[in-house]
Image (tube, rainbow, N blue to C red; front, side, top):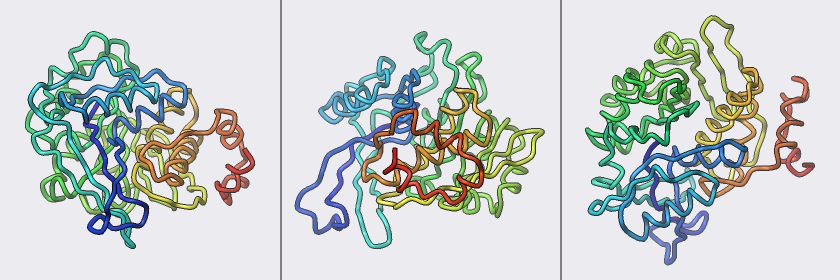
Length: 318
């Protein structure tokens, strides 16, 4: 559940201010997760709101094309679909948002009342939604406190967006929301910025509520800290990075797919890394994924074969 927008992007490496043409695509953290999960073989619905405009129709068509159900997407007759623009540069890709007053910002607690959502095993949210508006914050609070989807595991990606709210404002809100969820994803760098936590154990002490906290540390690896169990760390395989945008969403989708398939914590983290690698090697927000047999082979690799894994080479052999 969350906002997805139309994305405008100039040619790779071309600064936006000098671009004469841009490509039009679609991107949003939560729908990225939905798309990867669908391509990994799971039944997924995306819950959101779009404007009654060409961009809104493009967003819904794009998400549906990934195999995601869109029956729970409502159309706002007045508010527009949100927009963001990528600006490639030598230090990475900057993002400029044009989403104030968007259709998705009008979501509220009634958004999750659709009976078509009954029986969901997982509800995935992110820390982007509560900053969109007061009604969106009420929606996320309703989702994590009242648990309107009975029996669903609540998954939360902290996903702090500094351009939407500063760390000092976001920190207490995101900590409270995350601590009420069952599964939390957070980057080590964003946890440090938000809460001053320098390592995964410090993050876990700050968030005692969830059953599992997954701390991602970029190219180093990721740590799963499950309640009443020893921390599990899995290093990230080497991969050539084309663009980092969307890799965190891909990791979350891979981990959730592993959870839904009943994999152990090590293989959940491995699957997260493997799906994230697809995003890192692509300029799009939602990259294609290899056949499941490719994942199975690498998930089953012994630890001494996983640690030095160069994923670019492994992909070439698939």
